[in-house]
Each structure stands twice: as structure tokens, then as C-alpha cells.
Image 1 (cartoon, each protein chain N blue to C red):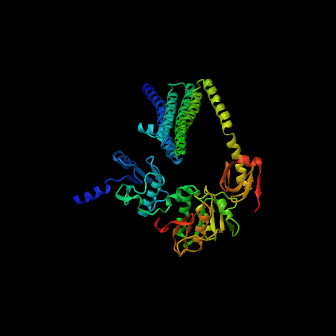
Image 2 (cartoon, rainbow over the protein chains, first blue to last red):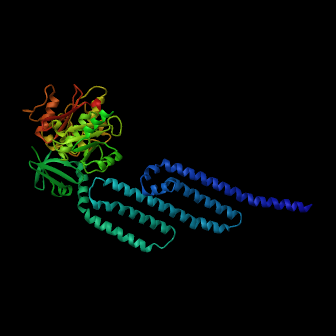
Image 3 (cartoon, rainbow over the protein chains, first blue to last red):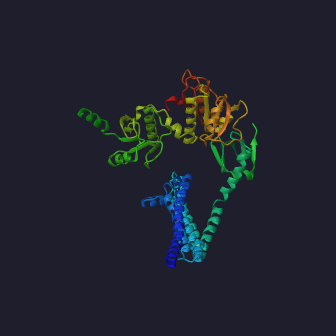
Length: 261
Length: 270
């Protein structure tokens, strides 16, 4: 008789040993699917579909039969299912719990974040390209068409740097390239936009304090006439037959003589 | 049926140019592919990406007005001249092309409506925005009552020197432009004030409450229009501005340039 007791005991312990991982696994998968759905709704509520519309990435993904949102929520679901599988295996005793935690803390999370960064980088890059293209649609200058791709690839470059750093791949050389690139932009951009920046800063003062208004007769730097327009960068004054377009920093530097009539 | 076919064939026979009013891309491409005469697109936006394009600032409900605007634009940009026979095609009842009309470009007397929009000092979009505000005012009035209004657009510095303030300027030190969302309401409120609105070349609202003091001698505007129209006509002759007037008595919108009435339209029809 004690034999039957052993068998029952064995059976019960086997059952409990296999039921617990099973329950964990099923719950994990369910949670993963629910969270995937939830994140999908959150993304839709945040206006992501409208934001990614028209980007190359969205179109490519569409051709593969899904959408950006589907991809993102799918990624989240997949990550959570991987977690559940790992948990199940470690409870079932197949995988060492320490290994599991290591995996969780380490590589799995990194891959997930890296994938997310790459996707977001692709979308933001595409979106920036589309936006800039639309902004410059009316400018009939061929050189302008160089700008959108430059911005796009800069964003992709930064995104891939972050992703590679996540995967703990050596990015030192790429960082040097990025540094040189940024330095070039700042130095050259600063030089190129020096006057525009100065005019803009002076323009803010002129617009807010309005020392002279449209219709006033003024003398600025030897140019005398009626003020026709004051915008952020320039002041237009006009007399009979001449129109002066004066950058605002010149206005501020030379001072303004208001002529009373 | 055969008789009608001949009429249509005669319509399209030896035309010198084709004007397409707001065509779809498919329509445009098939017509350009088969046509051996210049094809000009007249639309609010250049959606088909053509070289010969005339921007339609407002959707004239009156077809004649729309064609007139297109033809004047065509002559101004030298796609056609007065002797050109033009075939105009447009969607009258649907979005596709459903009507065709044949017209000689010199058929209309030159009113300068195209000039008013494109060759004024102020930017075309500014003039369009002002016109939209005025049409809106004409439709609804101020709290249901008909109102009159006078907008002087462009050459603001000179206009300010040819006018004086009736009271404090509510737009002093403000930086609103026509077309900003909040401005519609503001202009509607201020339209009950007497005097003119002055708007700069770039659309900034410079002042309300202005009493215009141009020399009115020799200004020739149609009989029966009041002092508001007289002031509008005169200020556009004295300066390079244009004026858009909403009449309080008959509710029509009129535009003046160079001291002359350029066009009038009924806001109810838009």
C-alpha cells in the first residue's frame, strides 16, 4: 500500500512542478498580449499614426503588411513573451535563475532598447525629411534638395550610435566623427548666420519695445524715409523713389532719429 | 446625337491654348499628352506641378468671373494675347471636367482683377486673407446687423501719413497679422468702430480707427456709392495701397486700386 502512496505523491509533486511553470507561462503570454494591445491604443491616442504618415518607413512597413504601430506594439509583446518564456524556464528548473536574471538585466533589454531606438530614429529621420521638403517646396533652388537627406542621415547616424552603444559595441571612432561633424556645423553655422542672429536679436527688441512704428518718419544711418515694415530681421523704410532694407542690428548700432512733423 | 458631336468638334477646333480649371492629376496628364497647344492650369494650388500655372486666390462662384481671372492672368504672364482662342474646361457640377467653353481672350474688358492680386504692393496671400475676412463680415454682419468696413492694404507707411487717428489705436504695440486665427474675431468686434483698418504689405494690422484724408478731387467712382467708397477710391490713387470695402447699404464687397473700382462681388454667393 505504501507504494501507491509514493506514486500518488510523485504524481502530485510532478503535477505541481509542471503546473506552476505552465500557469506562469500562460499568464505571462496573456499579460504580454494585453500590454501589447494597450500600448497600441496608447500610441494611437498619442497621435502616432498621423505623425508617421507619409514617411518612407511607414510605407515600407505597410508593404510588409503591417504598420508602424503594429510593429512597435508587436515588439513590446515579443519582448514580454521572451520574458515569460525565460521566467517559465527558470521556474521549471531548466534554466538557472541567476542566468535568467543576467539575461533579463543584460542582453534582452539592450536588444529591445536598441531595436526601439533604431525604429524611432528611422521614423524621426523620415519625418524630418518630409517636413523640410514641404517647407522648401516653393523654393526653386536645386541645392536646397541636399538639405533634407542631410538632416535625415544625421538623425539616423545619432540613432545608430545610441543603438550600438546599447549593445555595448565600441563606438569611440564614430563618436569622434560625430564630434567633428557637430563642431563643423557649429563653427561654420555660427560664422554663416552671425549677421542673421544679430539682426534677429535686435529685431526682438525692436518688435517688443517698438521705438518707431509704421508711418513714422525716421533717419537711420543716413537713410531717411517713412517706415513701411518692421519684421524680425529687417526694417524697411521708404522715401520718394528709394526703399531701404536695413538689417535690424544696423538699426540698433547706429541709433534712430525720429523726425517730428 | 451626330449633330451634337459636330458642335463639340467645332468647339475644340483650332484653339490656340487650353485652360484647365482645377483639374485632377489624371485629367491633366492625359490632356497634356494629347494636346499640341499650350496647356495652362488655373487653380488654388499647383497640385499637378506644371510650369504654366495661375493661382486662383478665391473660388469665384460665378463661372464668368473665374474665366475672366484666368484669362487676365494668362495675358499678364504672357501665355496668351488678346487674339488667342482659348478653350476653357472645368468641373461645373462635379469635381471632374464636365463643361467646355470656347472664348477669345480679348472678349472681356480688362478689369485688372489679376493685377490687383498679383502686382499689388501687398502679398497675394495677404489680400486673399483680407478678402476672406470681409466676405465673412458681409455674410454674418456684426451680431446679425449689416456692417460696413474699409480695409486699406499695403503701403501702410504712406497711408498712415495720409490719415489721422480718430481715437486710441487698439492695435498699437500688437503684432497680429490678418489670417491669424484670433484676428477674425477681433476685426469683427472692431468693425463697429468708425474709420478704416490699415494693413501693411506683410499683413500686419497697423491700425484701426483711421480717418483717411486723401485728396478726393477727380476720383471717379460709380454714382450712388457713399463716402466710404469715395475715401477708398481716393486713398488708392494717392498711395500704392489697395482698398477693400464692405458696403453697409447694399452688402457688396468692392475692391479699389489706383483710384478705380476693380471688381465687386456678393458675399452671399461665396
